[in-house]
Length: 349
Length: 270
Image (tube, rainbow over all chains, first blue to last red):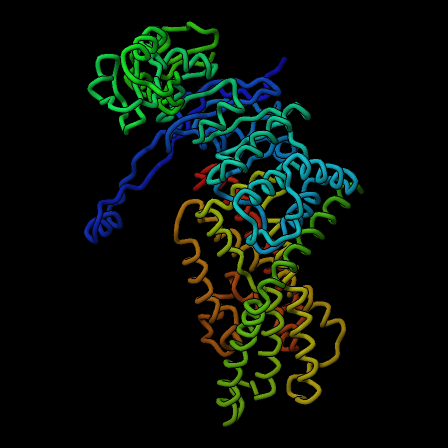
């Protein structure tokens, strides 16, 4: 089957004006402007199958949003090729734009002073959706997003969560095949985040849409995407399953303890690395394979009220993956879990 | 047919939305309209006083009154503000969702212009009519043929000014000073487009320079056609020819800047 999204060796370089601070720096920049090239994307290649949900992960400025914008046709790459829904995105024109939607978590398309429904009606006309289809799709989306009676309230009076839900409605009324979502849950409370995650899965299941998203919230990623693309400084470091990434980089387990009276941090140190100690709570890190043995030893040696064993937070796993990628250390050599690849600027899978 | 119906639907929705937004900002829109009327009225006041001592190069008080009332109407049809929005969208990132739509952002600007201008022209024409009942000086001779030509010239003037402002605003793809260029052009147009005085009152050298630029064709030409200052068929034909040349020139520049600009776009923010 053809891929819904294909990126080959995508590069994007921004030319940035460099200026020293202060009045003298400003004057020097006027007389002799200096520029620096910033490579936002460096030979990034990957593919996404139809109906797949894939998450882009990376720190701020890693190149995630740039990649999304190139694939949505908003930006022209400096070099490289891409095909999205069979089109070259930046040359696709209206036929391409009818097939995709992009939602930018920190930039809204909703008309600020008017009820959200006015934006929906405008998009209905722009995308040439019949009134019957519009009504059916709107009811559907309102139902899936648990949107209730908010679409006739001015956008400026909506909560952040309600606004994001309305942004999704505005973006999906023309029923796109491919969704690009940049931080769709940014700043939302836990309940709103959960609704949006549930919605995105339901939308994909119902319409077979392909979703490429970026998020800072690991909960988005773990709930939505089996596959992740890790990008840092414009380079794709990892392309594969999230579970494989965790297995590879989470070499330790964490024992979360609720301690009985009189237990000190010193009592725990002989069992492993004490990461946190705030009596009666403590967190101990031990080698993955040692976790069962250490747990048993702990329970018999010290007073423990409660004990649970967990993987380290996914954020730490990702951070470790970045470090590995940056060092170029383990790049590309441990394909121990199917599609798992850690690499430093390697080519597409 | 379907395509035409689609486009009519899109423009209908865009104009309707612009009206709904304007209703939210009715006070600001009203003040803007008043400013658009006040500026020519103040200038008229100055010339009215000067002409009190006798005609100025053939212009009597009533000629100035007709001229500046015509300036008010033509200015409302040709007024251009789009550069300020484009500049802010490009630099603030609001251009992103507009680029993701299957219609170009220029259509939103055209619809926005239609929404404002239909209403503003209706208001100022009505006010002009009411003033003309009480003040014969501002009456325009009833010559339907001339009015049709003046309406056509006003539409072409609006096209030149719109495309000029839009193309200049698109320079925000490269520079943070696009709106400064628009303001600079506005300053020059005070003199060269006939906004501050009828062009025939300016030094001949200035008039001949301005006649090869786009400025007089954005305002003075339709105003003088409407007030009957221009009568020669040859001058009228030359005026329309220059308007067509500058409309095409700015349309070409718009397309060039747009095509290059979106390649250069850095999609600031989110």
